[in-house]
Image 1: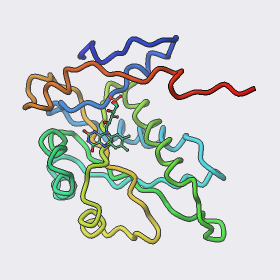
Image 2: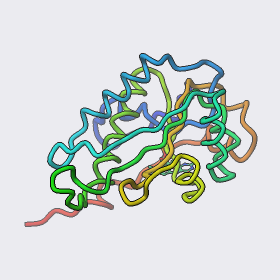
Image 3: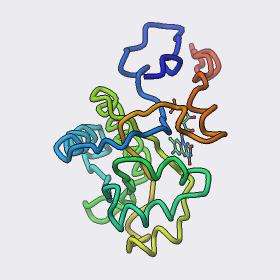
Image 4: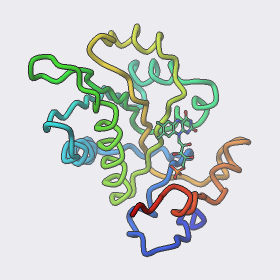
Length: 193
Ligand SMILES: Cc1cc2nc3c(=O)[nH]c(=O)nc-3n(C[C@H](O)[C@H](O)[C@H](O)COP(=O)(O)O)c2cc1C
């Protein structure tokens, strides 16, 4: 584990939150299906408006046609490293509530929360993931037969076991080796009275 990725924080943030980061260097080791199901179940324990659970994951294992098709749907800057992951997920958000088919304006919010819950569980299990918004929308919808009236694609997520940053080409190697940073809490909070 690249220690520089564990940030120094202003306050006493939980070690699991500090441990999760968006890795790019993945080893050949495959994630076991039981572990993958643990991640999916963790995601399902996320909160959601009306407990609608508007998430769906399409997933594929490295070596399968579906995995290769998913890699082809990624933008060029994501393909060189994401192709080495053990599993690739497409995270979908259901646009309408099951109840009376009403618009669920929280669908992307709730799916984002589920994705983060999944990745925190993964970090606890020494599995690393990287969410990607850099993908070809139309190609993904076409290839995987996603009904855009019902579903919105939130992101792709690649999962795998960590490998050394040195195996990456530039500019990905430097990004993998670089420290992570965040805004100060004072920059995004405002006390009201
Ligand atoms: C919705 C979303 C889309 C993202 N898209 C990409 C992407 O296409 N390519 C990439 O390299 N990183 C992508 N990222 C990762 C972010 O760049 C990363 O989370 C951010 O720099 C903070 O780093 P950390 O996750 O290691 O804390 C995305 C993250 C999110 C949440």
